[in-house]
Length: 83
Image (cartoon, rainbow, N blue to C red; front, top):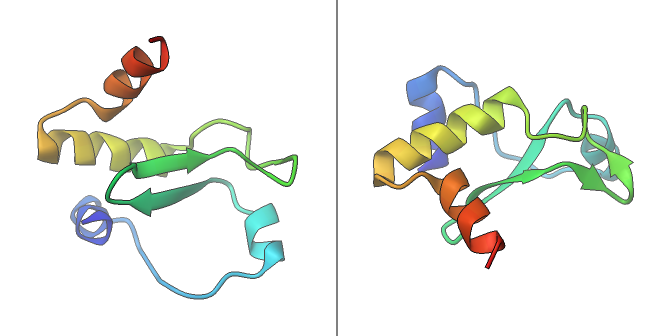
């Protein structure tokens, strides 16, 4: 689903094996799964990724996912995190 959303948003996607260097140098990173949809990654091995906050591509994908499923994923995560 994330590849489809990315294509709809004009975001280039690729799939491949990553090396540690690849995880330490991106502007932003996220995990994708059915349970978490798009989960921003802001730190790896105590190293901040980008500016340490979810980046614009992550935010666009989260918004597109939310629209596709009819639930504001970020709002829901924030509300349940406060419980």
